[in-house]
Length: 268
Ligand SMILES: NC(=O)c1ccc[n+]([C@@H]2O[C@H](COP(=O)([O-])OP(=O)(O)OC[C@H]3O[C@@H](n4cnc5c(N)ncnc54)[C@H](OP(=O)(O)O)[C@@H]3O)[C@@H](O)[C@H]2O)c1
Image (tube, rainbow, N blue to C red; front, side, top):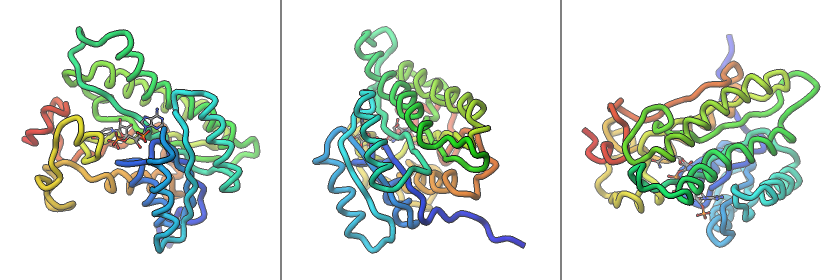
């Protein structure tokens, strides 16, 4: 008889885009579970306080923060090197930084297309490639874990999200491919595909008021909470998921057809 192996205590976890929203919740949840975290965003003024809060909290995980723009290869390389140095190696990498704007396909300029695909898919490509330098092992056995933030919009089409949906679908296929290419190096690669989650980014885009949202656990027919995605990330990072790779885990409450953000706002 064996107890489940959900523990991530002592793991070294890197999370991109952790100054707010899902990335912040992932960093805090790993730290609360006893993992040390290295976090980044484009602004030290924004990500620094998240690390300070973790370091001042009554949790055993420690936090290190630095500025890094995942669109810049040099930033990414420097962030991973500093994180590995500061934490003493890396075990789990969460490629979370991402974002979008909603627009009809015919209105998306070259620049708009490039901005969304380069942040989401390009950032995941860049960070995964650099992550491989730290997570792959030639010794057999466990290397590390990569968790990529996809979206239900990468699984199902939704109006206004052609650029974002294409990028997130690309992240899913990239992750599946990496899971096969790096299997012998002991690296597991999985995606999380959230439905609509209450974060500052989404609130800003859609004008959602937090007071309109039911309590976590009250119903499945609601907007999700960042912590509900963070819990899934901890599972995927843990030894309990040792036979899980190349998969995409969806977390969206009650299934709704045509999962576009605008449809979800009605939460029908
Ligand atoms: N919320 C949802 O409903 C939802 C649903 C499906 C998927 N997702 C995905 O989940 C992830 C997080 O979403 P969220 O709603 O939490 O987003 P959010 O509230 O907009 O936060 C995005 C985070 O990414 C950082 N960031 C943005 N551009 C960056 C860059 N170039 N380099 C480094 N960091 C950058 C931001 O920090 P700074 O501004 O300080 O740089 C911030 O910490 C994204 O990949 C998103 O596509 C979200």
